[in-house]
Length: 399
Image 1 (spheres, rainbow, N blue to C red):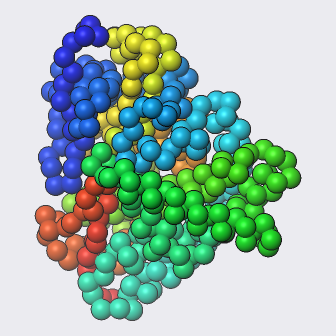
Image 2: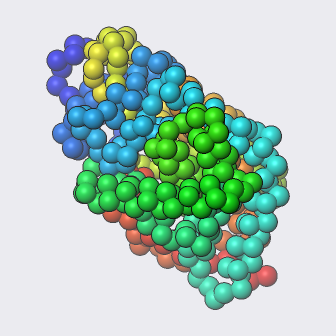
Image 3: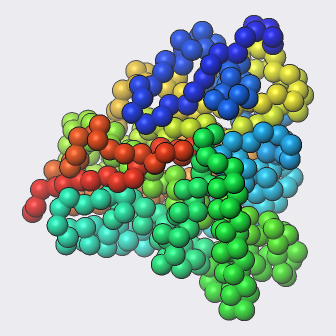
Protein backbone atom coordinates (compact mmCIF):
# COMPACT_ATOMS: atom_id res chain seq x y z
CA UNK A 1 0.00 0.00 0.00
CA UNK A 2 1.44 3.41 -0.89
CA UNK A 3 1.11 6.49 1.27
CA UNK A 4 -0.84 8.39 -1.40
CA UNK A 5 -3.62 5.80 -1.62
CA UNK A 6 -7.07 7.26 -1.04
CA UNK A 7 -8.14 7.25 2.62
CA UNK A 8 -11.35 5.44 3.47
CA UNK A 9 -14.20 7.29 5.16
CA UNK A 10 -14.35 6.34 8.82
CA UNK A 11 -16.90 7.36 11.44
CA UNK A 12 -16.76 6.01 15.02
CA UNK A 13 -19.88 4.06 15.89
CA UNK A 14 -22.63 6.03 17.57
CA UNK A 15 -25.18 4.61 19.98
CA UNK A 16 -27.83 2.55 18.25
CA UNK A 17 -25.83 2.14 15.06
CA UNK A 18 -24.71 -1.28 13.83
CA UNK A 19 -21.05 -2.00 14.41
CA UNK A 20 -19.22 -1.76 11.06
CA UNK A 21 -17.04 -4.62 9.89
CA UNK A 22 -13.60 -3.09 10.18
CA UNK A 23 -12.16 -5.81 7.97
CA UNK A 24 -14.44 -4.69 5.15
CA UNK A 25 -13.71 -1.00 5.71
CA UNK A 26 -9.95 -1.55 5.82
CA UNK A 27 -9.79 -4.13 3.05
CA UNK A 28 -8.38 -6.59 5.56
CA UNK A 29 -5.39 -4.37 6.36
CA UNK A 30 -4.28 -4.03 10.01
CA UNK A 31 -3.10 -0.44 9.33
CA UNK A 32 -4.89 1.88 6.90
CA UNK A 33 -5.43 5.56 6.13
CA UNK A 34 -8.81 7.09 6.91
CA UNK A 35 -10.63 10.38 6.76
CA UNK A 36 -12.18 11.16 10.15
CA UNK A 37 -15.51 12.98 10.62
CA UNK A 38 -13.73 16.28 11.30
CA UNK A 39 -11.76 16.03 8.05
CA UNK A 40 -8.43 14.97 9.53
CA UNK A 41 -6.51 12.20 7.80
CA UNK A 42 -5.09 9.54 10.12
CA UNK A 43 -3.65 6.07 10.08
CA UNK A 44 -5.95 3.68 11.93
CA UNK A 45 -4.38 0.62 13.54
CA UNK A 46 -6.82 -2.26 13.99
CA UNK A 47 -4.92 -5.55 14.26
CA UNK A 48 -4.08 -6.77 17.76
CA UNK A 49 -0.33 -7.16 17.22
CA UNK A 50 -0.08 -3.89 15.30
CA UNK A 51 -1.97 -1.98 18.00
CA UNK A 52 0.21 -3.45 20.72
CA UNK A 53 3.38 -2.72 18.79
CA UNK A 54 2.28 0.84 18.12
CA UNK A 55 1.34 1.82 21.68
CA UNK A 56 4.60 0.53 23.17
CA UNK A 57 6.71 2.20 20.46
CA UNK A 58 7.87 5.59 21.73
CA UNK A 59 8.35 6.81 18.17
CA UNK A 60 4.62 7.50 18.30
CA UNK A 61 4.21 10.67 20.37
CA UNK A 62 1.21 11.75 22.43
CA UNK A 63 2.68 15.18 23.06
CA UNK A 64 2.90 15.97 19.34
CA UNK A 65 -0.71 14.89 18.85
CA UNK A 66 -1.96 17.58 21.25
CA UNK A 67 0.66 20.23 20.48
CA UNK A 68 -0.47 23.81 19.80
CA UNK A 69 -1.42 24.37 16.19
CA UNK A 70 -2.59 20.83 15.54
CA UNK A 71 -6.32 20.26 15.04
CA UNK A 72 -7.74 18.60 18.13
CA UNK A 73 -11.24 17.18 18.52
CA UNK A 74 -13.24 17.18 21.71
CA UNK A 75 -11.44 16.08 24.86
CA UNK A 76 -8.02 16.28 23.16
CA UNK A 77 -8.22 20.07 23.57
CA UNK A 78 -7.54 19.70 27.28
CA UNK A 79 -4.82 17.03 27.08
CA UNK A 80 -1.73 19.18 26.39
CA UNK A 81 0.57 19.23 29.40
CA UNK A 82 -1.46 16.64 31.28
CA UNK A 83 -0.33 13.12 32.10
CA UNK A 84 -2.29 11.85 29.09
CA UNK A 85 -0.69 14.33 26.71
CA UNK A 86 3.02 13.99 27.47
CA UNK A 87 5.86 11.66 26.50
CA UNK A 88 8.79 10.37 28.53
CA UNK A 89 10.65 11.75 30.39
CA UNK A 90 7.92 14.25 31.37
CA UNK A 91 5.27 11.54 31.41
CA UNK A 92 7.48 9.26 33.52
CA UNK A 93 8.03 12.03 36.09
CA UNK A 94 4.31 12.77 36.37
CA UNK A 95 3.28 9.13 36.51
CA UNK A 96 5.74 8.33 39.32
CA UNK A 97 4.08 10.96 41.50
CA UNK A 98 0.80 9.05 41.59
CA UNK A 99 1.67 5.48 40.60
CA UNK A 100 2.12 4.32 44.21
CA UNK A 101 -1.54 5.08 44.94
CA UNK A 102 -2.68 2.69 42.18
CA UNK A 103 -0.53 -0.39 42.78
CA UNK A 104 -2.26 -3.77 43.04
CA UNK A 105 -1.59 -3.88 46.80
CA UNK A 106 -2.87 -0.36 47.49
CA UNK A 107 -5.96 -0.85 45.35
CA UNK A 108 -6.77 -4.25 46.85
CA UNK A 109 -6.71 -2.60 50.29
CA UNK A 110 -9.63 -0.46 49.06
CA UNK A 111 -11.83 -3.48 48.32
CA UNK A 112 -13.72 -3.46 51.67
CA UNK A 113 -14.49 0.24 51.25
CA UNK A 114 -15.64 -0.19 47.64
CA UNK A 115 -17.79 -3.17 48.64
CA UNK A 116 -19.31 -1.06 51.41
CA UNK A 117 -20.19 1.75 48.99
CA UNK A 118 -21.75 -0.81 46.62
CA UNK A 119 -23.84 -2.21 49.47
CA UNK A 120 -24.99 1.24 50.58
CA UNK A 121 -25.99 2.24 47.06
CA UNK A 122 -27.94 -0.98 46.50
CA UNK A 123 -29.63 -0.60 49.90
CA UNK A 124 -30.74 2.88 48.90
CA UNK A 125 -32.03 1.67 45.52
CA UNK A 126 -33.89 -1.23 47.13
CA UNK A 127 -35.54 1.16 49.56
CA UNK A 128 -37.12 3.24 46.81
CA UNK A 129 -39.92 2.41 44.36
CA UNK A 130 -38.97 0.63 41.16
CA UNK A 131 -37.80 1.21 38.49
CA UNK A 132 -34.47 2.67 39.52
CA UNK A 133 -32.16 4.72 37.33
CA UNK A 134 -28.89 2.82 37.59
CA UNK A 135 -26.89 5.78 36.23
CA UNK A 136 -27.93 8.20 38.97
CA UNK A 137 -28.35 5.63 41.73
CA UNK A 138 -25.34 3.40 41.25
CA UNK A 139 -22.96 3.43 38.28
CA UNK A 140 -22.04 7.12 38.53
CA UNK A 141 -21.92 7.60 42.32
CA UNK A 142 -19.84 4.45 42.90
CA UNK A 143 -16.64 5.44 41.04
CA UNK A 144 -17.23 9.13 41.79
CA UNK A 145 -17.28 8.50 45.53
CA UNK A 146 -14.20 6.27 45.36
CA UNK A 147 -12.05 8.75 43.42
CA UNK A 148 -13.34 11.65 45.52
CA UNK A 149 -12.23 9.90 48.69
CA UNK A 150 -8.84 9.07 47.20
CA UNK A 151 -8.24 12.62 45.95
CA UNK A 152 -9.88 14.47 48.80
CA UNK A 153 -12.65 16.02 46.71
CA UNK A 154 -16.06 16.66 48.33
CA UNK A 155 -18.41 13.96 47.04
CA UNK A 156 -21.26 16.46 47.40
CA UNK A 157 -19.84 18.24 44.35
CA UNK A 158 -20.31 15.20 42.08
CA UNK A 159 -23.12 16.73 40.00
CA UNK A 160 -21.08 19.85 39.32
CA UNK A 161 -17.84 18.19 38.27
CA UNK A 162 -19.72 15.55 36.29
CA UNK A 163 -21.39 18.32 34.27
CA UNK A 164 -17.95 19.72 33.47
CA UNK A 165 -16.73 16.23 32.62
CA UNK A 166 -19.63 15.74 30.20
CA UNK A 167 -18.51 18.82 28.29
CA UNK A 168 -14.80 18.00 28.35
CA UNK A 169 -15.31 14.41 27.14
CA UNK A 170 -16.79 15.71 23.91
CA UNK A 171 -16.41 14.36 20.40
CA UNK A 172 -15.82 16.20 17.11
CA UNK A 173 -19.35 17.62 17.25
CA UNK A 174 -18.84 19.42 20.54
CA UNK A 175 -18.35 23.19 20.42
CA UNK A 176 -14.73 24.07 21.23
CA UNK A 177 -15.79 27.06 23.32
CA UNK A 178 -18.04 24.90 25.48
CA UNK A 179 -15.19 22.46 26.12
CA UNK A 180 -12.65 25.11 27.02
CA UNK A 181 -15.14 26.89 29.29
CA UNK A 182 -15.68 23.63 31.18
CA UNK A 183 -11.90 23.09 31.41
CA UNK A 184 -11.40 26.61 32.80
CA UNK A 185 -14.18 26.14 35.36
CA UNK A 186 -12.84 22.75 36.46
CA UNK A 187 -9.34 24.22 36.79
CA UNK A 188 -10.80 27.06 38.86
CA UNK A 189 -12.61 24.54 41.06
CA UNK A 190 -9.37 22.70 41.75
CA UNK A 191 -7.51 25.95 42.28
CA UNK A 192 -9.84 26.66 45.19
CA UNK A 193 -9.55 23.12 46.57
CA UNK A 194 -5.75 23.18 46.31
CA UNK A 195 -5.64 26.42 48.30
CA UNK A 196 -7.79 24.81 51.00
CA UNK A 197 -5.61 21.69 51.08
CA UNK A 198 -2.47 23.78 51.32
CA UNK A 199 -3.83 25.38 54.46
CA UNK A 200 -5.31 22.15 55.84
CA UNK A 201 -3.52 19.10 54.36
CA UNK A 202 -5.14 15.71 54.83
CA UNK A 203 -4.34 12.06 54.22
CA UNK A 204 -5.34 12.07 50.57
CA UNK A 205 -3.75 12.05 47.13
CA UNK A 206 -4.28 15.75 46.48
CA UNK A 207 -2.39 16.70 49.63
CA UNK A 208 0.44 14.38 48.58
CA UNK A 209 0.60 16.03 45.16
CA UNK A 210 0.63 19.49 46.75
CA UNK A 211 3.55 18.41 48.93
CA UNK A 212 5.37 17.17 45.84
CA UNK A 213 4.82 20.59 44.30
CA UNK A 214 5.61 22.77 47.32
CA UNK A 215 8.28 20.77 49.14
CA UNK A 216 10.13 18.96 46.37
CA UNK A 217 9.32 21.13 43.32
CA UNK A 218 8.57 17.96 41.36
CA UNK A 219 5.76 19.47 39.29
CA UNK A 220 4.51 22.89 38.28
CA UNK A 221 1.32 24.50 39.52
CA UNK A 222 -0.30 23.87 36.13
CA UNK A 223 0.78 20.22 36.23
CA UNK A 224 -0.63 19.90 39.76
CA UNK A 225 -4.01 21.23 38.67
CA UNK A 226 -4.01 19.23 35.42
CA UNK A 227 -3.17 16.03 37.31
CA UNK A 228 -6.06 16.50 39.73
CA UNK A 229 -8.47 17.20 36.85
CA UNK A 230 -7.28 14.17 34.87
CA UNK A 231 -7.56 11.83 37.86
CA UNK A 232 -11.04 13.06 38.72
CA UNK A 233 -12.42 12.72 35.19
CA UNK A 234 -10.71 9.44 34.33
CA UNK A 235 -11.45 8.07 37.79
CA UNK A 236 -15.21 8.16 37.39
CA UNK A 237 -16.27 8.74 33.78
CA UNK A 238 -15.03 5.61 32.01
CA UNK A 239 -15.78 3.28 34.92
CA UNK A 240 -19.37 4.52 35.18
CA UNK A 241 -19.86 3.97 31.46
CA UNK A 242 -18.25 0.54 31.62
CA UNK A 243 -20.69 -0.49 34.36
CA UNK A 244 -23.65 0.66 32.26
CA UNK A 245 -22.56 -0.77 28.92
CA UNK A 246 -21.26 -4.01 30.41
CA UNK A 247 -24.54 -4.55 32.22
CA UNK A 248 -26.45 -3.99 28.97
CA UNK A 249 -24.23 -6.58 27.30
CA UNK A 250 -24.69 -9.04 30.16
CA UNK A 251 -28.46 -8.63 30.27
CA UNK A 252 -28.54 -9.48 26.58
CA UNK A 253 -26.99 -12.85 27.56
CA UNK A 254 -29.21 -14.19 30.37
CA UNK A 255 -27.42 -17.53 30.38
CA UNK A 256 -24.17 -15.77 31.25
CA UNK A 257 -25.90 -13.88 34.06
CA UNK A 258 -27.25 -17.15 35.45
CA UNK A 259 -23.77 -18.66 35.34
CA UNK A 260 -22.33 -15.70 37.26
CA UNK A 261 -25.12 -15.81 39.83
CA UNK A 262 -24.50 -19.52 40.37
CA UNK A 263 -20.73 -19.07 40.67
CA UNK A 264 -19.62 -15.58 41.82
CA UNK A 265 -15.99 -16.76 41.74
CA UNK A 266 -16.21 -16.26 37.97
CA UNK A 267 -16.69 -12.49 38.37
CA UNK A 268 -13.02 -11.39 38.03
CA UNK A 269 -12.65 -13.31 34.77
CA UNK A 270 -16.06 -12.12 33.59
CA UNK A 271 -14.97 -8.52 34.13
CA UNK A 272 -11.95 -9.07 31.86
CA UNK A 273 -14.21 -10.51 29.17
CA UNK A 274 -16.64 -7.59 29.54
CA UNK A 275 -13.75 -5.15 29.25
CA UNK A 276 -12.68 -6.95 26.07
CA UNK A 277 -16.15 -6.96 24.52
CA UNK A 278 -17.67 -3.66 25.63
CA UNK A 279 -17.38 -0.86 23.09
CA UNK A 280 -17.18 2.56 24.74
CA UNK A 281 -17.34 4.24 21.34
CA UNK A 282 -15.36 7.20 20.09
CA UNK A 283 -11.70 7.20 19.11
CA UNK A 284 -8.83 6.59 21.53
CA UNK A 285 -6.17 9.28 22.01
CA UNK A 286 -4.07 9.80 18.89
CA UNK A 287 -0.31 9.83 18.47
CA UNK A 288 2.03 11.31 15.86
CA UNK A 289 4.93 9.45 14.26
CA UNK A 290 8.23 11.17 15.10
CA UNK A 291 9.98 9.41 12.20
CA UNK A 292 9.08 7.03 9.40
CA UNK A 293 7.88 3.82 11.08
CA UNK A 294 7.14 0.46 9.48
CA UNK A 295 3.96 -0.97 11.00
CA UNK A 296 1.51 -3.62 9.82
CA UNK A 297 3.11 -3.87 6.40
CA UNK A 298 3.08 -0.15 5.63
CA UNK A 299 5.41 2.77 6.29
CA UNK A 300 3.84 5.57 8.31
CA UNK A 301 5.62 8.84 7.46
CA UNK A 302 6.97 11.12 10.15
CA UNK A 303 4.48 13.75 11.29
CA UNK A 304 1.32 11.81 10.46
CA UNK A 305 -1.49 11.06 12.89
CA UNK A 306 -1.94 7.47 14.13
CA UNK A 307 -4.85 6.11 16.18
CA UNK A 308 -5.04 2.66 17.83
CA UNK A 309 -8.45 0.95 17.64
CA UNK A 310 -8.45 -0.97 20.92
CA UNK A 311 -11.98 -2.33 20.59
CA UNK A 312 -11.20 -3.75 17.17
CA UNK A 313 -7.91 -5.23 18.37
CA UNK A 314 -9.80 -6.91 21.21
CA UNK A 315 -11.89 -8.73 18.60
CA UNK A 316 -9.00 -9.91 16.47
CA UNK A 317 -9.87 -13.48 15.55
CA UNK A 318 -6.19 -14.40 15.30
CA UNK A 319 -5.92 -13.81 19.06
CA UNK A 320 -9.40 -14.55 20.44
CA UNK A 321 -11.45 -17.54 19.28
CA UNK A 322 -14.93 -16.52 18.12
CA UNK A 323 -14.15 -12.96 19.29
CA UNK A 324 -17.62 -11.47 18.83
CA UNK A 325 -19.12 -13.95 21.28
CA UNK A 326 -19.37 -13.00 24.96
CA UNK A 327 -17.96 -15.86 27.03
CA UNK A 328 -17.41 -15.06 30.71
CA UNK A 329 -15.36 -18.25 31.12
CA UNK A 330 -12.88 -17.15 28.42
CA UNK A 331 -9.30 -16.24 29.39
CA UNK A 332 -9.40 -12.64 28.16
CA UNK A 333 -6.45 -11.43 30.22
CA UNK A 334 -4.52 -10.28 27.15
CA UNK A 335 -7.09 -7.68 26.09
CA UNK A 336 -6.04 -4.11 25.36
CA UNK A 337 -8.96 -2.26 26.96
CA UNK A 338 -6.49 -0.41 29.21
CA UNK A 339 -3.91 0.11 26.48
CA UNK A 340 -0.26 -0.86 26.87
CA UNK A 341 3.15 0.70 27.22
CA UNK A 342 3.88 3.92 29.09
CA UNK A 343 0.28 5.12 28.68
CA UNK A 344 -1.27 1.92 30.04
CA UNK A 345 -4.22 3.13 32.11
CA UNK A 346 -2.95 4.25 35.52
CA UNK A 347 -6.23 3.33 37.19
CA UNK A 348 -6.64 -0.10 35.56
CA UNK A 349 -6.51 -2.00 38.85
CA UNK A 350 -8.96 0.38 40.50
CA UNK A 351 -11.39 0.09 37.58
CA UNK A 352 -11.17 -3.71 37.74
CA UNK A 353 -11.91 -3.73 41.47
CA UNK A 354 -14.87 -1.36 41.09
CA UNK A 355 -16.33 -3.41 38.24
CA UNK A 356 -15.87 -6.65 40.17
CA UNK A 357 -17.60 -5.32 43.27
CA UNK A 358 -20.29 -3.60 41.21
CA UNK A 359 -21.32 -6.83 39.48
CA UNK A 360 -20.91 -8.86 42.65
CA UNK A 361 -23.47 -6.57 44.26
CA UNK A 362 -25.84 -6.09 41.32
CA UNK A 363 -26.03 -9.76 40.36
CA UNK A 364 -25.80 -11.13 43.87
CA UNK A 365 -28.35 -8.88 45.53
CA UNK A 366 -30.84 -8.00 42.80
CA UNK A 367 -32.43 -11.23 41.52
CA UNK A 368 -34.04 -10.98 38.13
CA UNK A 369 -32.25 -7.72 37.37
CA UNK A 370 -33.51 -6.50 33.99
CA UNK A 371 -34.15 -3.41 31.90
CA UNK A 372 -37.35 -1.54 32.72
CA UNK A 373 -37.65 -0.22 29.15
CA UNK A 374 -36.84 -1.70 25.74
CA UNK A 375 -33.15 -1.36 24.96
CA UNK A 376 -34.02 0.65 21.83
CA UNK A 377 -35.65 3.30 24.04
CA UNK A 378 -32.46 4.07 25.97
CA UNK A 379 -31.09 7.56 25.30
CA UNK A 380 -27.42 8.44 25.05
CA UNK A 381 -26.00 11.89 25.69
CA UNK A 382 -25.19 13.60 22.37
CA UNK A 383 -21.75 14.81 21.39
CA UNK A 384 -19.85 12.51 23.75
CA UNK A 385 -16.55 10.88 22.80
CA UNK A 386 -17.64 7.78 24.72
CA UNK A 387 -21.14 6.32 24.86
CA UNK A 388 -22.78 7.82 27.92
CA UNK A 389 -26.36 6.95 28.88
CA UNK A 390 -28.72 9.59 30.19
CA UNK A 391 -30.57 7.00 32.26
CA UNK A 392 -30.60 3.23 32.69
CA UNK A 393 -34.00 2.23 34.15
CA UNK A 394 -33.89 -1.24 35.75
CA UNK A 395 -36.16 -3.55 37.73
CA UNK A 396 -35.56 -6.66 39.78
CA UNK A 397 -37.56 -9.26 41.67
CA UNK A 398 -38.55 -8.30 45.19
CA UNK A 399 -37.12 -10.77 47.70
